[in-house]
Length: 147
Picture 1: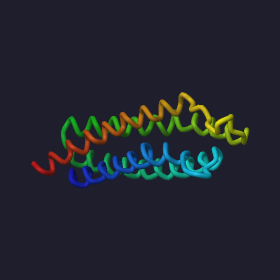
Picture 2: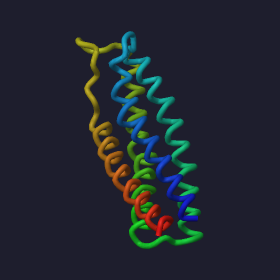
Picture 3: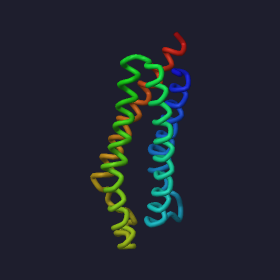
């Protein structure tokens, strides 16, 4: 079970790194991407990412519950799941309200940039914590597999 959990954790980690730290910041720099279009793409991409994250987190929790790997891995998985839960239940609703307001205004300020809300910074900070937790969990699980 540790091998499956490690594989799933590293897939989860890769998805978070690719979407949150590559796609999200770069999409608004692409030629022709307007604020409404970028927000629409972001909503779709993060809804899909979060759905997959829920599935991956569920698989990891089941694997860890079925064959407890040790305190470091269990704690790291717990932190990753807690961060995901916080993002989904507390931060994403605020981000949705913010993007609704920006889309309703349908205008961009001079220069084309919309100031990020505090919720964006909270979400990004939580992503950093989640990445650290997933990396820790993956390494701890992989050590068990290799050992």
